[in-house]
Length: 534
Image 1 (cartoon, rainbow, N blue to C red):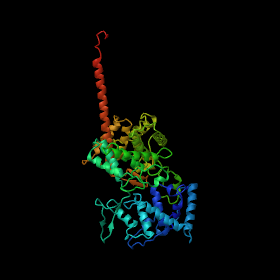
Image 2: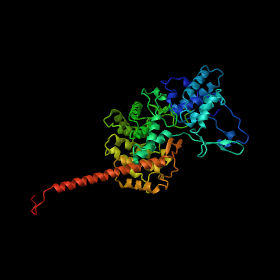
Image 3: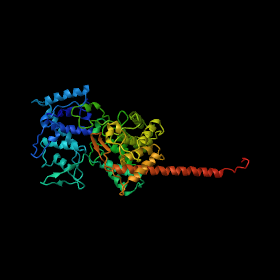
Image 4: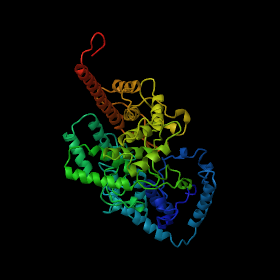
């Protein structure tokens, strides 16, 4: 405990308008901080069994462990936070702390108010685990019908995070111990939206039973209650979350993808119209001051929070990102909004400002520049942006320059911090899909590079119809928490192949129509005499 930075429970007493409060942090961080503040105050100790060895945690041996808390960065602000950490740790040792128990009680209330119907907190593993620990430390019991028991039941339930193989049950080990493999999160809403989009792009009819069932399930998942996002946004609720149950934290990216998926499905017209209207109004209300969209919060961009001593477990804030903004702009374009729309105009200015020097866009939630660029270009096309504009052509050139010799695209996680891997890596199905979606949106269906990319997808498709992909191409926190979405390898190639087929049909129809016009014109011309007179 001496080697850990302070997480003072009193932080929950600070109002949201204060320069630093729980709402200065991203939703995933604030939930973890609130629970950890209780754990840090109680400082539990558990005696390990004799056979448990954790010496490998100490690089130079346990006796030589350096328990000093290091500065996160070498800046004046980081040095100030280091001094503040030393003060808070000294304060924690005082016998009398007037606001401590008040803060603990409020932290517990704050946690309980955010427990979801399935027992989860935030739909992610860290806040769920630490909230369970915090409640147990404050006296909650597993053998009682309460939030602790509900939290554990959800964690190990059929839709929980504790799984073992395909069965989703514990594996019994010799000696009677059960072991679990823990997932960090589940993504059923996100996955369903993407699969529906891929099927639609592939030409599945809008009234197909599979799409209708998926669409009705997604309609049922729309969130019409409030959450933490209301602290900085006054819009009426109407978004979707990532998980089975996470009503407190809907996110704009899921909402945009769900709305894109729902718009063509043959559902009850009135119900769909109301859902699209609520979702659109919520998304517009969540636009940040700079014109972009963050995932869970509006204007959550206080970068200095990254320099606080306990801010060492990944990204601490949720600022706008170009990939989320690109998806939302694409949906707004689907709804008929164009470049003269005020909301779209602000978003386009943000996207132009955020473009990298070499023409690419940074991928916050996917690896990396291929994802960002592949999300922005379809958004620009959907709202009627001039796809011959210089900044758009720079993005197209970047994609063309980073195609691999095998026809695919790939990008390693190391590209987030190592320029040598910027936009480079072994080809993957998902990243090839992203690049092709960008090229198709930019009008490059007839480009030989696009055809090579499509050929790569066709030639690497498995006999079962999908694609193999071991790479982690999804991002939680860049380089700190990476995700392998098992459906990415299938849905994005299918989207690209479907859109390519549609565009080639339109190109062929256009060529045929032009030829037909020329034939009709030729037939209507008067014959030409040998001397050239008509």
